[in-house]
Length: 292
Image (tube, rainbow, N blue to C red):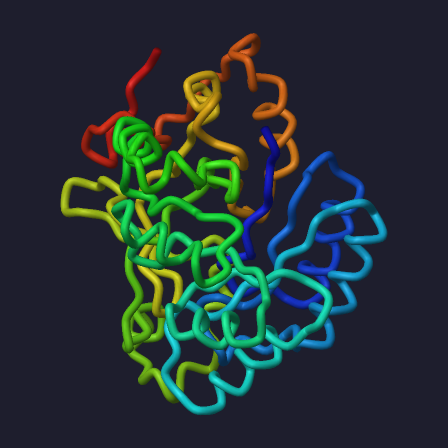
């Protein structure tokens, strides 16, 4: 079982990002995803910066994957997408289906991100025929669902031709919108947002009237209010999951990486925080935390 770091979902200052990836280079992580996936206005790092970091990480022995935007809204974003697809060195994570035909045409192997609507054997087989080498399961699906899908004849016959990756730590990305909710929360128009999301390096909490955290606002992205944490479900991923993804947080990411590694076989179960959840993997409501 391998462990990956997903692309940073939040808007961090350039130096914070640089420091994070230096830590990643020195860590035990196997795969690192790089790139802006949420908002094209976030330009602390440009394509050339990500490529420089990618080469640094590769020299440190990491597999690097460049991640594309999840919601494409303008011609300029399509031009940026082509830069990632034409990088010539690294595989690409397609987070918008619009990237896939371009990657197929240029014979670039790709990872199908969790935002790609892939829920059945027919879609999975189609993506494979287009060049998919790794599939990130949609975050709301369960172990039971995954096991049934991988047992389907159209998938079982080619299971050794692609990897399965599961989002296992972090606030789950649930939806994207043409509106920027972080800007709206500050009474700003999207076009005059002044990049206010940089003030919220772990997103902006949304609570219900009774004080329960129900969502996290991250620009145009809405995330789960609970932190998804499957550290204690790793043993029942054996034989199904090839890559376990941790979503970067401002602090504690690499400590959790080591906790995940230590518990790969269930030998070192971890205490979950009050706001952690694991319901989706267990075919329960997403905000549920079930103790083993």
